[in-house]
Image (cartoon, rainbow, N blue to C red):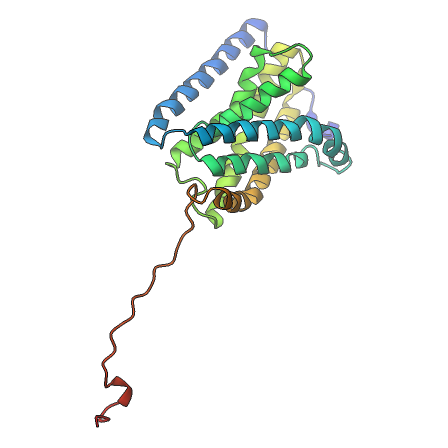
Length: 261
């Protein structure tokens, strides 16, 4: 997947006490981020039953693609493309579904809820050991920083279908990958699963995932806005052009100068 010459030889494997402290700090950041989003969400419209249903539907769709269609059919094909899996090309349908869900709701917490629901379903269906609470920070971080961006944008994410939707998608796609991929490879993997990675691997794997997810979400952004407008026109109002009022024309203007009868 990644050329061996790029990986280097320096592995990231912190001592257990240090890893434990880092793990606690990661959980603290996640909890603080969720609390911040919850507090700021009071400035937005309240969640509706429809929003909750959308979260449930999109979370299931994300899981169906991510671990059933994607892993079984798409990923084996993408792995045949040079740097295809490294750029997460198999995530294109996933990012499209995620952007559609965000466009339909556009409220803080929607990204974390959809991604985390997908993560929980994955652990229940495919882990073989049930839910592993120790790995929850990885699932939460994939949506947490996306929701922080929604908060900072003041509810204007995907408010238009032009190039601003491309920029919103690009940023949110990149935030879905970073810092979740880095935290998983550098800290959670070695601490919980005993999987050590080199600095080169962590850097390039994160970089290519950020680029891939960012471009995929940027492509999906305008399409997600169109779908949201067709499903729920009230979610993203279609911009209308101001109607020009007709000007009063003098009755004798058509006669020209000196043309009075």
